[in-house]
Length: 200
Image (cartoon, rainbow, N blue to C red; front, side):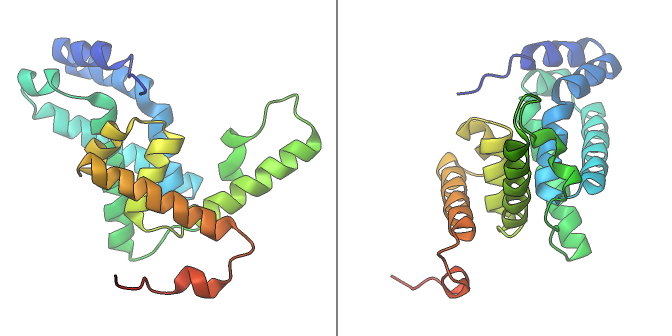
């Protein structure tokens, strides 16, 4: 289980002074917010917009919270829930699905500086393919996989972010990973990937 070491400091800072506390919240979570936003949108510019819009919504929400509500806050899960919901709303409003991640989007996933050229090329190709296939997942599965395996949240926080029971969150992660494996396996033909599920 991944413990959030910044949570207590962020909560205390928000209670003491909302503006300074919010600055600490942004510093503590901006990386994971952008990472999740990028995996949801698939495009760096859209991810920046989604992250900024989510942080703005978070600040507006915090201004209406009383002290008890702030003290009970699980900051990382709460903030990522805003990112996921804002992203879902943007996709629904635009009536479109995100495009595959571009090469520019993969710059933070590159291998270590000392890696060979072949390793870097292979990692870039894999990252692009993974991003393209991740974009093909239904929103709930994509969000669950990103939160669990990119943001490295424990399943309890994934469930909290998605607003569902832990069992449902586990199911979304499992089904999303299963679908990703099928999409990434070159032995699969398109008929098996698009065929409707048989009733049992």
